[in-house]
Image 1 (cartoon, helix red, strand yellow):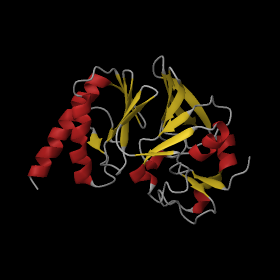
Image 2 (cartoon, rainbow, N blue to C red):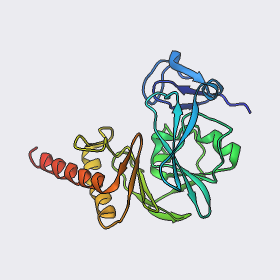
Image 3 (cartoon, rainbow, N blue to C red):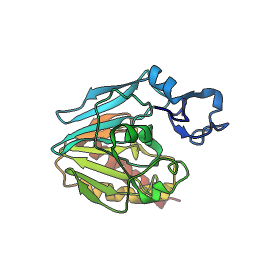
Length: 243
């Protein structure tokens, strides 16, 4: 297996092709890069059980900023939400990788080649330069349901940001973090758009009987997270009115 691919140790972004001088995601210099196979030898993608059908995947040791991917055991087979930054060929295969947005493409091109996994990313994010070199099988537009997983296009943080619900679990990635009273909306992207589109998240989850929220680096109890999110939006709206 041969790839010309580099991994940034600062942020975990995978760079396909010739090595750039700086990371296009975080701006780190090339002396902070490792080859993909060095990353495979150094970082082990390690599962952490969330419930009987969801597992959180994190690198050990931590790879840069580190974002979690999540494995879901559906009735029709296993899938991932987002993708680990490190390629580990001994992981259990999945049949599909559903992305929340373009920032966490990880080593998805390599897992796709290894397993024949189908990659899903909203068309508005698939067109972004950070995602353009990654193969995407399904550039979706709007909401959909597949393998029992509900996908909801939100926008905001990125134009194609999508959240997912499966069973009793909400997959929100990094739209708002951390859990608790210090929660804030993701500061990257168009702030007004992120705030305005957050209202759709609250609308979708307001009547849901869920149990768990899986984020980019956290797992939280749903009811308390929803209340914190609601209070965050109330504060954001008040701040907007004072401008």
